[in-house]
Image (cartoon, rainbow over all chains, first blue to last red; front, side):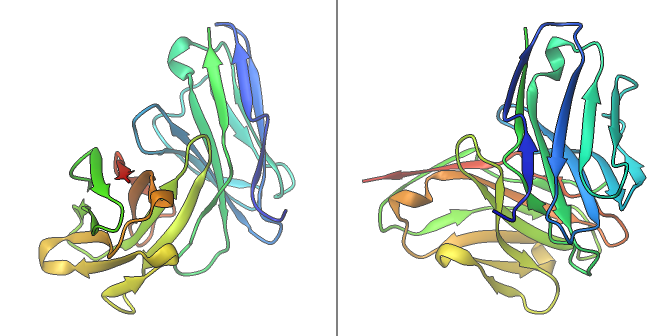
Amino acid sequence: DTGVSQDPRHKITKRGQNVTFRCDPISEHNRLYWYRQTLGQGPEFLTYFQNEAQLEKSRLLSDRFSAERPKGSFSTLEIQRTEQGDSAMYLCASSLGELTNEQFFGPGTRLTVL
Amino acid sequence: AQSVTQLGSHVSVSEGALVLLRCNYSSSVPPYLFWYVQYPNQGLQLLLKYTSAATLVKGINGFEAEFKKSETSFHLTKPSAHMSDAAEYFCAVRDTGRRALTFGSGTRLQVQP
């Protein structure tokens, strides 16, 4: 399978714990995105990388959230001191650096904070 | 900031009937426009995209969308619904100069036998 992969697919944690999600983009894609999707809503942009550089962050990305893409390949999204409001589907997408910037999405990681 | 409005959070059609899902965007400058489909517990799959090459865009699974600048709309249609079309559909826009997509809140399509 050469699509975007995400791990884990599901994560249940207790409030206050830290969690980390991983995204592996399509291999030749230099751009990587994180989105958050809550129930009944469309995805909301969190952050964007071009290679290893984090070029844009949404106001949704509070201080408890940090994302990295250390070698310009896979990326991790960490949430510290989770809150119940963090419960959502976290989607990763990747794209080539071309005009339309078509983004290919992974299956997502569903986070439940108890 | 760019916004996307999808009229109708739920649409129900009979199998074989026309599907029409509405999307309006707010930008005065034609952006890049996309329709994605999401099946339960899955990520988003691109149906089609508008990139200014043609106002009528054909996508996968028999879907198409027409870009109308005067109406700032990009409605999704399919002549004949199939049971397998039941899913959530999202319209998204990307402004030139930005990389992030802005999504609408989605329309859940039900197809009745």
